[in-house]
Structure formats: C-alpha cells, structure tokens
Image 1 (cartoon, one colour):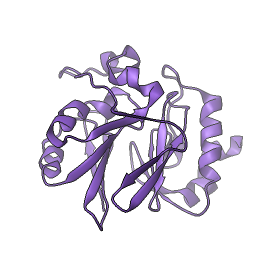
Image 2 (cartoon, helix red, strand yellow):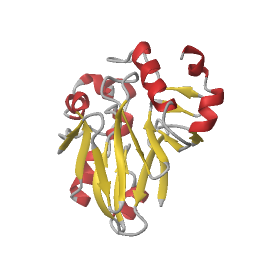
Image 3 (cartoon, helix red, strand yellow):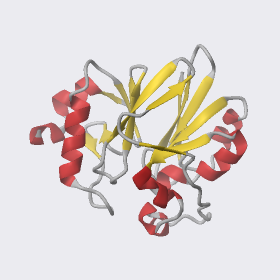
Length: 206
C-alpha cells in the first residue's frame, strides 16, 4: 500500500509505504508537520523515515515524525550535513515561518544498499544531480525518485551540489533498469519508467 500526501508550501509529495503482508512501513520525504499525516502515522508501524535528499521542502517534518514513531532516519552520507541544518538545505531561502529542527541520520546508506520493509526489499540507488547525495528507492514495482525524475522532466540542477552531468548519468542508470516501474516523484503526478524512456527530454542527452 502506498499513501500519498502532498504537503507543505512547495507541494511536496510525501509517501507512506506499507508492506501488505506484515504491516511494516517506511515514510519517504516527510516534507512538513502535517496533521493528517501525523494522525495516520499513529496507527502505522513505521520502521524507516527515508530522505531522498535533504532540501528543506522534503525534511521539515523529520524530527517530529521520528519522535512520534521512533523510526530510524535514513539518508545518503552527503545529505547528513543538510539534515543537521547546513544552509545548503535551502531552509533560509524558502521562507518558512516555522523553525527547522535539526536531526541526524540513524542509517547512512550508499549505492547498492538494501532496506527491508516487512517482506519487501528496496535497493538504494545513488542518483546525484539534484544534490550530490540524492537517492532513489527501487523495489516492489515502484521507484521513489525524490527530485531526480519527475513526470516528463527532471529535478533542478542549479542548487548547491547540483550537477547536469551527474543528473544525466543518474538518469541513464535509472532508464537502464529492467522492466517497468511506477515512479513516485517528489513533486507533481506519478509516472512510469516506460513513459519516461519514451518521452522524457533528458533521454535526448543519453
């Protein structure tokens, strides 16, 4: 089961994935301290809070949700400084009125690592480009892509640690995955890997 919450001033997609057999779950990109999300989490067994990248519009709810659920915070090593409040998390520039509460990762992942959620396994794919520590989660027929791939486009590359060449290489790796996947992106609507192979403009650079 996947529940989608579009929350926060930037319209960020936060995803609650729950393994159907065991009821164990993970939360991807808790963008904001949203009451509906918090209420739902009280009845769920959330094992991990996964940060695809630590821009403020994806992490404002991490500290509070960790306190509520006791879940472990997961990110790539290059994102931990942003979780701890480094200005490259863009918090000073987005205009939040609420303070950002720094938090540190409990689990630091690298490319190829696995996360076990009940009977489901997700692979960590390090996909720098939007930031140098961006990751995608690949498993159970879905990709949680953060701000790497969107429906018909890709994430911005002009923020600190962003890179056009790295974005192209990351996109190339994702496109090369076997089969098709539903893509749950950090903003806007879901898409599929087969659609992006055919129509994403970034494919012209591959």
